[in-house]
Image (cartoon, rainbow, N blue to C red; front, side, top):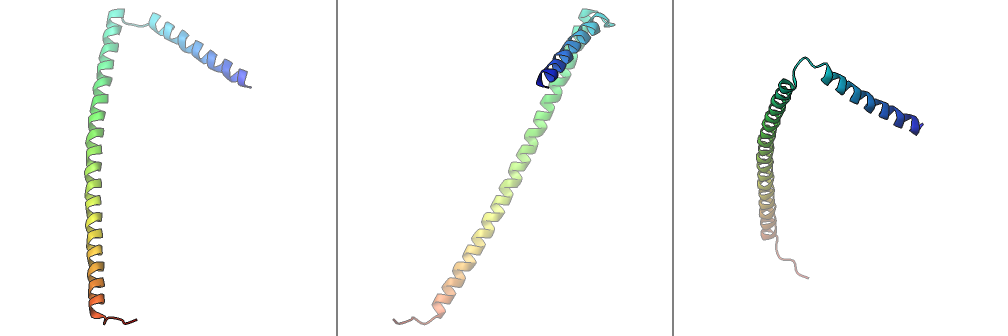
Length: 101
């Protein structure tokens, strides 16, 4: 079974190679034109990748800012809860008479 799958992959690669050769031989453009087309497509792809990277950086920055805001809110809530608990403890201990043993 593994040999059969390996042979199928080899036939796929062979067909891919033959298709590429036939495509180049029957291309309607000259080699110079084809290279120019390939170069321009590569430049377009490069620009597209740069644009997507820029957007990803902006989005990551937005997420960092949101995370920082949430963290600051959580810290503030924790401080408020801590202060409320401390104040309640101080009020409770100040109101109780001292216990003797």
